[in-house]
Image (tube, rainbow, N blue to C red):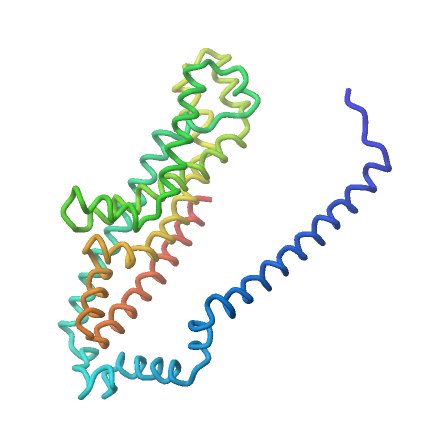
Length: 293
């Protein structure tokens, strides 16, 4: 039986935590001061431009151009499509494509997670007794997760569009690969923290490893798997417009074209449609998370 910590040690712990908090606060303040100091010295031109009246006048002109007013950005004004049903129908079709991209992406991420989570998640107390093959598989899978989430979605899209034609599939693959590494890492921590007693009882009763996994581990882990996947779906839907710049799909492609041709009212329509889509996905994901619990 391990000895209880001495009272002096218990009293020292709050003092140590207070010291760490003070040091962290000082470091944060130093970094904050250094960041602003760098902006006002090495980046003085961009910092002063933010405070100039000309910058704010350009911002006001851009807001006017978004609603079709006559501005230096759009002399004579722009055609306003807000009351055109055909324009809104086109936006609805693009929103559907964007939603399809996000759903396919989270399915790719979730499928990759389910295929690798047990190989990459192992209770720490069992890792020391694992054979060399399982330990090597653990290292390879963990490295795969790190690479997947270390490369941003936009970089994945740039690389994929070299070998695949631009479209929704490229965007979905780019989003799915990046989020595969994130979802798998989160779900691996769930597996490592679950109660191993049901799986051990099944193994003691003669069940195979697959049966112990299906009946002893997955019932505990699946609600958290679904919760993390839905959280990442909310993040994916916010990233689709950026990936669409490269992958040429959905609202992202339309946003790029509208900005390129200075069709600023179309830009506003795309952003409005995108806002409605994000809110709808957030509400749907929240409801699904409540059902999963």
